[in-house]
Image (cartoon, rainbow, N blue to C red; front, side, top):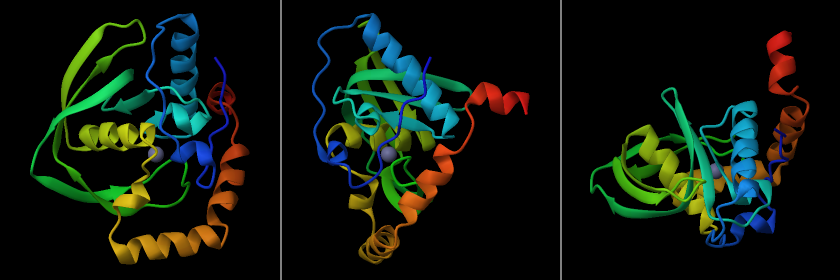
Length: 181
Ligand code: ZN
């Protein structure tokens, strides 16, 4: 397994729609493993392929002792009821803002072997799925923020906060070394 460099805001790949996965091969399974490893290392709850510079419709997630990869995901249905909890993104290290999301989402997709998945997520898990699905369409969490929060976020980004936080993160040791320390 390998740690993959995480792209941060400003990289055009984050604003690009990822392409449908057509081949469920060994390389796709390996990418999912590397993304899971990278996500755990960065202490994230989700990671979309765009964020490691790969324009494939796949994301990884971890929530409540469970984790996985979802390929070609689609939102089937979302609840009208929403939650306005703090949200962050590995491509915006250090930034957290209240972001309104549906409380529940039914999401359909495939696993890395091409098997169909159909799941109803609620609360934080729904938030993770919808956040990562947005990534695959070039949409970022700052697009959902209230106007004043978005302004504040952009000000911090222009001041170079993301680069600084990304440098600190890049200096972190890989997981196995961290466990030994
Ligand atoms: Zn994100």
